[in-house]
Length: 290
Ligand SMILES: O=C(O)CCC(=O)C(=O)O
Picture 1 (tube, rainbow, N blue to C red):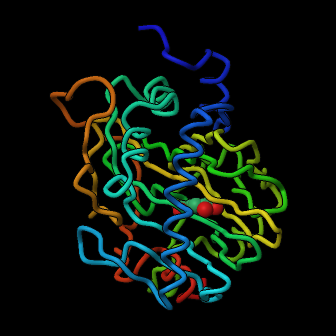
Picture 2: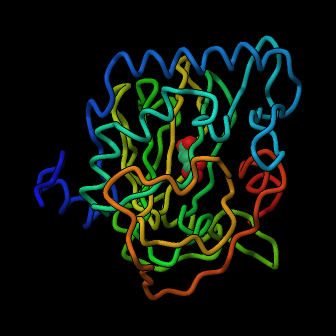
């Protein structure tokens, strides 16, 4: 079957390095619509001092950073936006980014979860080194996180940092001294820092990242926001091994191909994650010292 959007070279690059940057993955109109949705939520967040709203499992939908205030909003996470934004749902179902994922792990692909991660200007949100697959293990590791750039992402506004080829390495523990820290050990984090490649690009670009790729990001000390719309897709024959950390009425929706008549397993050992009780994984990463 011919590939929908990716060249053989791009597919090879993804398989080797574990990620791929797509320019113009969504249209300028879609970028404007995402920005419009997110700006509305930022305005709303000024009225709140802590996480608020409700998702399917009763946890807060909107999560704010410790430096959040009415005059200096620091809305860091919107959980499951596919339920409150038709633009998000439409992108998950129909974008070139989703078609590209079908080229990589398809033809049969399903939706797992979505979120916005934002770092508004001069905010302190950091993401510690981790692999997404350890937060959302499946029976096989054909899982891809799609990170859509809602703003231009530069070296200055806290870009995603990736450890190339870490998709070929082990699944690292996110548990330390019996506590789920949601992050790899300090020693490993230092090693990944030395290999880190920043993922920068214009608004409308998308980074497709294999679920085993180690990644992190630093605070935004610039005047420009860095907001990402993020969604996770899996091969349709991959069955979740733990509860969805971001439950949604659309979880499991087929976004490409057909329902497979089988389940596929691949060989690995993995520690099951702790399901967040608070608004987001930021609380797990902040609460625990790795
Ligand atoms: O927002 C970022 O920079 C990284 C996002 C991420 O790693 C996550 O939400 O799992």
